[in-house]
Image (cartoon, rainbow, N blue to C red):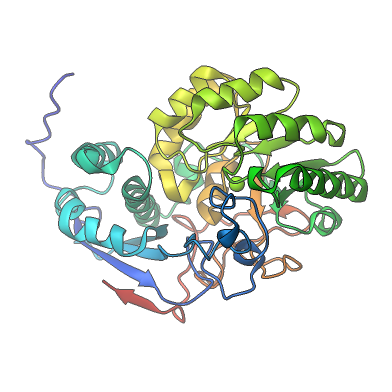
Length: 403
Ligand SMILES: [Mg+2]
């Protein structure tokens, strides 16, 4: 590979010259990028939802019980010599903070915030020895990347969607993730995705209960409506095939994350066994290398990168690969970051809206109290403003603890 020489830099525009990076833990509950940080009793943590740990009975009733919600959201703020700021809510808690303070900040302080490709690459390469190329370290780089995009937009007075190619549609249609499928349909959304309750540890009885639940939900929403299920990495190959066959009549629009993200061989097997079923994955794959492997096999039909976990710079690369294979990209969760991507993406017919109301019976912002003006769907559609950056104003009532 050619050597990258960035040593002879002319005098830098102070509006973009990074002078500081602050990291805070989001102390207020139900605020920020950690969508699992809620009070006890919230559907996302404390209902029976199949997950990688639910094969162990003691951890079945609540995803909080095995610590799905331990990491906590963070808030990253980047400042420049010219007095500009950009920020993002991100994921990874104290681990992310430590990595930024002790390692990644050396690539940022004094750098030009517009050099997104250089900065992403330097942070990514420097973290290779311990990042595992996926997970919390890459998520930290993603959060910094989002804060930089926000900063550049604020200096230029342009929304991020304008900087990545502009709108390809006026409004975003949304599907809803949550237990209230019929309600989401009544609200005007294009589809509903329900969490699968039981997994392989629950045997034939659990499979039967899953089948009844899915068939009953299909009855409620009728035939002409997109209905999906989310398996949150809980299944194995035989169960995924049995389940797909058991609910074939429900005509599910997709089955999501049937298997853990690293097991691409098994994704291939379930697609070969049930080619009539659309399968999706991607929310726990965080780099173009992971997505390259998923795309190469064509064993998944729809890609679901999470903007808060991949960053905008890397998601654009993933989307570029997907476009050459005619693959749909529907981002996971991630609020304004996903909306800015989705509204400018020809590969994204609609976005996810995860319903984070405790009972999923009302519409609340995905990042909760974090921002004062986060757009939410109205009649199943999200409208974006032309505010600069990601267009999200920090709620000063949210408690941030700088670390
Ligand atoms: Mg999911």
